[in-house]
Length: 96
Length: 485
Image (cartoon, rainbow over all chains, first blue to last red; front, side):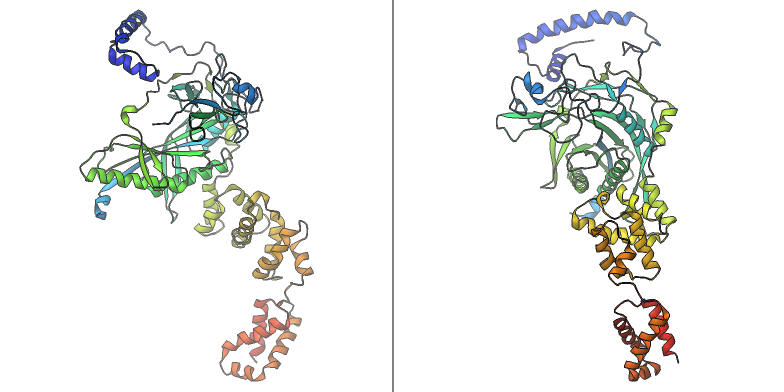
């Protein structure tokens, strides 16, 4: 897989990260190396093998529709870097 | 603008409806899913997206999805997986929404819509999948920050996606109307568009009539009432045709409806389109749905409004209008069904529900479930009218208001106490008629000479003498007999 500056730009947009232009060459290089390393797996023949998604054979693990109060509002807000008495406060986000 | 320009085009509309389920707890965690409560009080480490937490599927969500799927004639998938839809937003603490991607629980199926004249159209469905709601962001309270309430984060949703088979804003309105009615009958959602427990997005495009290729489409969001769905789509159709006719092209944007201006504006352009990087959710093991389970859910299906409508029209011979009003809400048709267990006078029962009962509910601003008169008491009022003991107007104007006040008195007892029972006893009536006729000997001669309109005068006198209790039908018959010789 070809990694170039456009790939880095796209990924940084999706990851909400910003990089200096000079840093991008280094990132292209690092990403290319890790991808090449992982691409080694392509040498295996996986024809007819279902992708492994779950780490157990369990199915239908469900719970009854019952309410359990596990934490209070105070506890919910406790670890937030910014909050008021009722809400989490975050940087102003207007969907555009 | 020339009308014929718009006639050259065919609008193509598909709808995505998000149905917020009325379960007690959330989709993948046990915190309360109920609306209201202090901000951030209906939360848990799972819905807050804390690391190391594991979601677990709410049984009721699966059952409700199957219920809706069966009601919409869908195929129910046997092996269901969940997926993560990744995007960053402050009210989505995990950074992904747990949804279904490649294995929606329901596929195919259709919803039948009706136009004003009762003409039907089947709108095909693409899929229904299970997912979770995000929290709520508040942008207009604090000038320097957005406020986040996660009470809604993780509340279960079903997303119903239609095929692009709708052809007008009016049809879209009918589609949302029928879907809303259905989820309320199934009692899986309160169907409130204004409060957001049902949300509708529309994919709208236009093409020249006869074209088989679809035009470029725009997605329209934020239509928070049934009428706004129609208005937004109608505006969007016109906007796209105007754009094409003036030589422009349609940009594949996400647009938002401005209900005040009645217009749509760009929310997200195609360039800004998200890349959600769906991948399987490994934390939720697959849900396997077998035929036996589907049958137990099927047994819970109530009679659906569509079937009731047909029954009311073809079996009970009610008008399309009556049947539409009676099947508009489950509580109303439930009451009507209960009523006609006690009387076979369907038209009269329909009139009672749509007339005095509905006005009473409106006046008191209460719901059908809180209506104080039982169906069997109400039915005995209808029987009183049928037996000729009281007239319809006396029933509605005098007896009915008493019935809603007292919880136990029968309509007959009320009518007797208020001295409202009609005289249909021939002997008593004949005496009134004799008195009436002897009061106007001249008029009797005039009547006999052919001035038959005078019957009204005699009837009026009979009613007066009987203090309004004479059964008009019987009195009229006896009066004509008395005047015949």
